[in-house]
Length: 131
Image 1 (cartoon, one colour):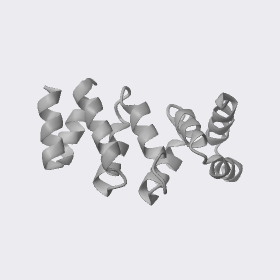
Image 2: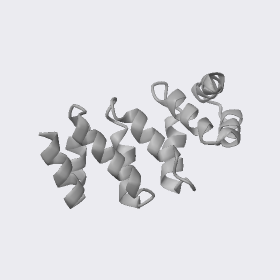
Image 3: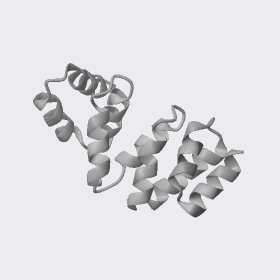
């Protein structure tokens, strides 16, 4: 069950265990592990697993939020999030979370420099959601 897999992943740091955990149905154990990793970030292994956890639709919002709240934003997380801005599925969520954390100027620059209409649309949609 997820409790055992989460514990094995946490103790061993084994990427295959984490991969299995992120593929399974979300429950309190997988959510607790994402939160534990968020507390360990910006440790590189924690950042790597937070990025991997975004593959799980239910963990995605928590994992993205954990990544964007890192100050300063690690290079690998910054690049990962920049790539996600190009995606139809996750780009708007990522743009909104980044904007809430004060990355509006960076998002504006990425949108204005990009030839990708998806990035521009995700930026506009995120800005429209801000209070």
